[in-house]
Length: 366
Image (cartoon, rainbow, N blue to C red; front, side, top):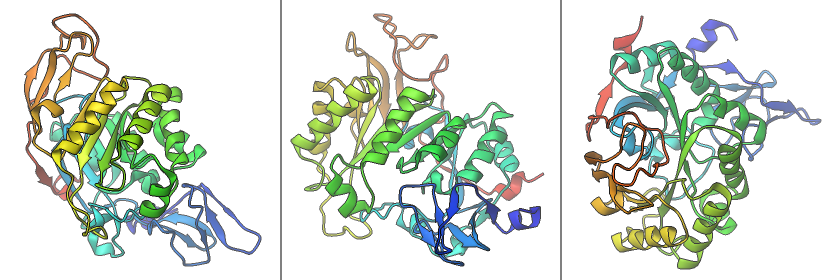
């Protein structure tokens, strides 16, 4: 694609093929959208133009904001540091409970209020003192060409890349995408195929394949998040099955976050998650061998803090997104018993706290 087309947000992609009937199939995610000329995929941002699949939102964002890394949520990746976060429009899932629906379900390009080249994003992150950039709000797999270019630019400034994703991607794109990511938070939305199909319009197995790829074939640090929805994925049976699978297939050191649902989008009739449900999920996870289990979207200092799996001492105290204790040595080990804590840590905690700083990228353009 010529540079002028990039400025319009349109770039060529490579994960697609032409079908016998003349349609073009997108191969980025397991939806395999089959498109006639001019049609868009369910994600909205990938389209058939002139017989090929293009990305239509390259360089365009729904907004930029500096957040605490714990908000992603990542509790074991550079704790306390600021992360420059952004997303685009669209999504390749159709979650009825979507809590970013104004972005992920957008069909209006005026949602994309800010534009920036990969180099501008990297420069902004560097000048703002961010240790990482997060591709979030909607799923970065659908704008992977843009995310990868941003990640490449960030590496020039020693800035890490974080994917906040549902993990719904096919094998070849998955391998390329995660070559450029340093950390990920993957939504494991439930642990039944029925939930995935009826509530998200997707399938469970491709997500499990992504998790196993991350664990066994990459060096990406990743954590899991499950939004606990009353009456849909909160049974003891499902939580047991899920957490047992995680320990058996991913190991005990992958952190799990159990977060509170609030009524939104097309599930306004479902009540908010009681805090005690999150506490129960965390307890089940730990009983099944998960060493680092957390509660989220509720005020719970115990459930938000990190503990040594050997001696039980508090390693990182958290009050919402504020770090209140730091009991790791310079090697990421418990100061009391010298047991290593799994994660990516610096010598000391960052001091960003709970601040949220909206940013206009035009202020950082060259």
